[in-house]
Image 1 (spheres, one colour):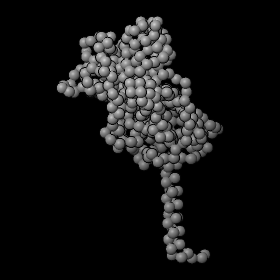
Image 2 (spheres, helix red, strand yellow):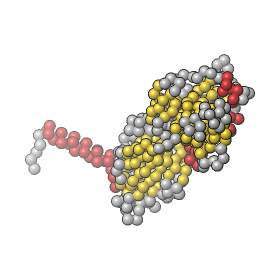
Image 3 (cartoon, one colour):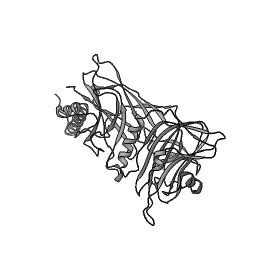
Length: 401
């Protein structure tokens, strides 16, 4: 064997060390130890499982494509998120006959000269020439609360579980009606969030507004009296306006194989999964929906097992150190059948929120096919209100017990 010069030997040893380190890291990402494996495959669905040394945003990514699906006109009222004056209009947009999705996310922020109790109401005005019929297709409404995580998580769960109503309400031309009769009755204390997620169909053109008013005026009287539309604040809230995308179909470009180790898909990051655009009519400006809140993602994820292992799907709060609003995450998804039955799962299911690594939340465990053939994981996801983004979906090969 020919001896290498000292410099060459040093370079060789360095290269060998780096190579071994890379192999070690790759091996660490391809498998988990027996104890963590047992934790994952035996954990109840939706529970928090600690996975030390596993969770990082640097895990290999599975590329995907998004297809814009036909969907309803999409409106969101979340800018200004905190309504600081006793009476004002926080949102106003025109809508056409057809299906409308509306996400209301506004807080009573009045504290000067004193904190007061208000009402925050989403209303629709019939701007057509004939009576408007409004029928609710999807409905989610929570009582005003200071538990924003609960509102976001429960709101998605209720929306996913709701079914179309058979009856409709009628609004005469020029008249105004609360979109959510239950929400109209609630009073809102300082710092309480009004959270509503609705999908409805109308047969006349209309104008949707979200207003804050006192606790004694009728909705119609308040609507007639209040003229000032608040400007966009842009310092808080996801945005407001009418947006051009309400539904996505997300497809993985490659088939995930358990032999390749741990991998991930990251959604709602504003980069690979960019924010949708729309228009804010009060200013006439292009609006950005930072977070894609209220947009539904219908995911189809292909996977197979060539080494006999199953696949555990978890999520976690990847940005827990990004300021005061990222200290926790709460989510809800609809997931296809695996070890657990198909259906709606709150994440986490055993507590209100998950906080930070090493905490992961188990979404589902998918057993391998008997012959190793390709399978499809189906998820329905929407970025959860109040929680920090993005949402990582981490796929961990596991030995089934």
